[in-house]
Image 1 (cartoon, rainbow, N blue to C red):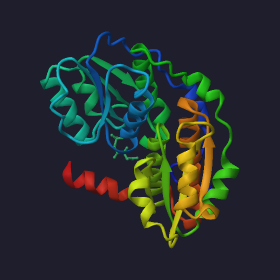
Image 2 (tube, rainbow, N blue to C red):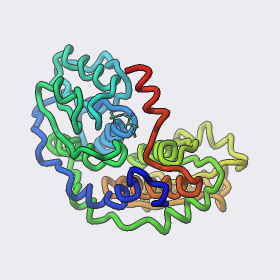
Image 3 (cartoon, rainbow, N blue to C red):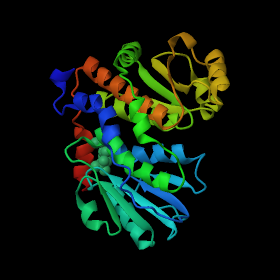
Image 4 (cartoon, protein in one colour):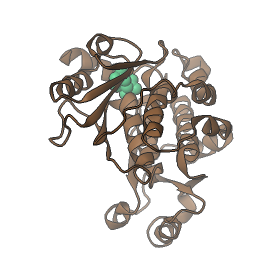
Amino acid sequence: MRALDSGDMVSHVESFPRYVAEAREAETPDPGKTDGVAVAGMGGSGIVGELLAALCRDVLDVPVVALHGPSLPRFVGPGYLFISVSYSGNTEETLSAHRGAVERGCRTLAVTSGGRLVKEERDHLCRVPRGLPPRAALPHLLAPLVGIANHLGADLDLRGASRSLGDPRERAYEIATGIGEEVPLVYGYGPLAPAAYRWKCQVNENAKRHAFWNYFPELDHNEAEAWDGEGFAPVVLRTEDGDMEERVDATLEAALPRERVHQATFEGGLSGVLSAVHLGDWVSLYMAGMRGVDPTPVPKIERVKGLLG
Ligand code: PA5
């Protein structure tokens, strides 16, 4: 796997627990009273907004929304804290959203390693370490958002989460070989839903393969009906004792071929989410290795950016 790995993605994924432990959440400003938090970002940067929104859903009184595009929904106004996350600091959609937020009078915070976003941010800048592929910087990009959420009353423990991250390589290898040539369909729920989305994106970018994701209970009302088991490999990310366990078991009983489903069980909360992300990152690297592709370069993504930039 390492022989193909020009950008050292394997070392970055290996370092994920350390990155979580080192990521700095404490330096974020206290936003005080706020109507809501909007987090704009694309791809490997944007995923942290989805993770934050899911983690805050049941603990904060204000809405936290993740945005993936250049325009702002109408409800984002001067009472909002607007967080722009772009690892490079040069992603057009995120820059446009950021400018829109400034125009609407939002307080802003930019999370980036450099680029134009540094020059454009007027309120508060959180710099993350340079030189990583954006998707490998998830802990660094997430940490300032965790800091904001904790100022607003969440109790997300990044240090504690870093201590609970094990080494999931063996399980990841089993899952990757089990998926083989099939198309993974990754399912989650609650905060494990954006983790399922992260799996899909990592398989796309690292292994250069298709993957799809969905979440309970919604998938029980559509996708469950499509199952005939041909060409697809279901992966279910679940917790030990969540409200959804009975439903997941019923789905495995009624619709999915239980013996072909790859399951992975996690704790609840931030620890479980980061463990799920870490496992998926390894699965995507093993899938890249099995396909003989270099995980780091994303030439098509770069080409699209180049054509539009
Ligand atoms: O993983 C990647 O390289 C992409 O998904 C990027 O994160 C995405 O294109 C956005 O770029 P940036 O993270 O620099 O804003």
